[in-house]
Image 1 (cartoon, rainbow, N blue to C red):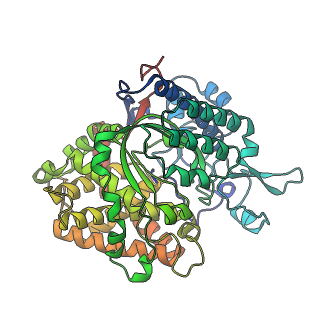
Image 2: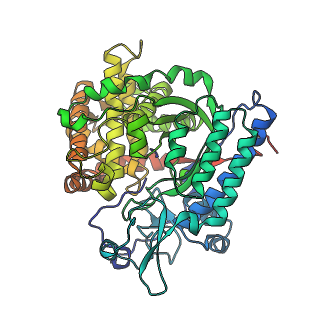
Image 3: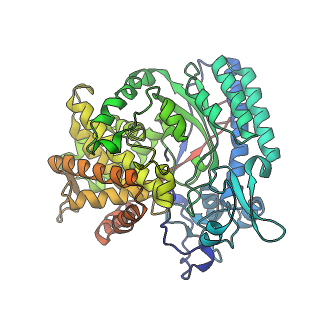
Length: 540
């Protein structure tokens, strides 16, 4: 999923042996553009409107738990000490004193580098100690690593560490279930409540795949593992409260059915595409009305691809949720202004919201392509690629999303659209995502892709104007070559190769940095932050 940031290099020293402290930056709340999350609630029933308030209350608990995972249990006292000025506001956006869109640089004096393991692991633990420890289940998603009274590493399941908070969340989900008009959604909420207090999520994930008739949805729990930059093992709490856009969803419904034939056409040998994507995947558009926890930290997700469970994906596929109002905000406030500065005027007309929406949508669909297990069957791809798994997966989804657009366009499935719109909008989106920085899996993946496409002549910079254009023929060639490379690295479980690609191409060169600095001087926001809650929705 998206958001879905974030991956660290496997050869970095553990936190306690980092030699060179980061220079302290400044609070930068101005790099975020404010956007109010609203939606048309006029067609909802009284029960549905009440349910939204209950789901937001449950989401607020997820926000608290993520703060504790990202910073520590004493975050409220620390926030109070920071105050209410720019530093306090920026701390709230970043869930701590580290700038998530500046490679985790601290922005408050006296704060050291952000621990790679966040608060999932003891601060004095090294990778070597963890690797040597006998801890059955130590790579699990849903446990904290702590020290016992003898100083030895031990595991504390989430449902034990956060027992009271998770019980309160479960009670709220059951209350929401009693208000639900959709019986299937009510049943899902009850199953999700049970999952939160047991850390057993697969049954609720499978059931969620069958929930089709609900206008309101919620994604809630420990989901993405990007916050764990030490190993990429542990999931962080988050939540989205969503309202389905029925008209847009009807337009999207048919695209997931193309996955099996698109898988067959991937530009790799058969062994790298032997798995058959689940056919129950669906696509829907939503207005998001509340973000909490990991989803609200730093750069904001504009599309979701879940569940992450590989077994569920192989059995049933995934659901792709396009967050249309947040996507429109990024297009209006960020993408178009970037194009005005960096895109050649001859191609400026090819930047459209429809192409931005489609590229984002097909990125999420493309997570279902390729394989989830290495070709030798020894492990999942994510287990084999460890801390670079997230950036490899995001890079794969980006380039295969474009491959899907191209294939469907060539076969006439996209109707009378100009493929150049997708390519130029894609290039402009790379500039947008690169600004998320190296601590973001999406930002790292975009750096790799930018450098790869420049080297292959697909992105061309005019030295006189300082603007970029797409070479459309070379774009197709570069797209196929990068698809082949990433799919092969994943299928082989080639950690060293993936790490080398990330370290050599996942960097911002001097020329690109100078161009990105032009965006900063033009006061173009890097991302968005939300005014959100029951008051903004008119539910008070």
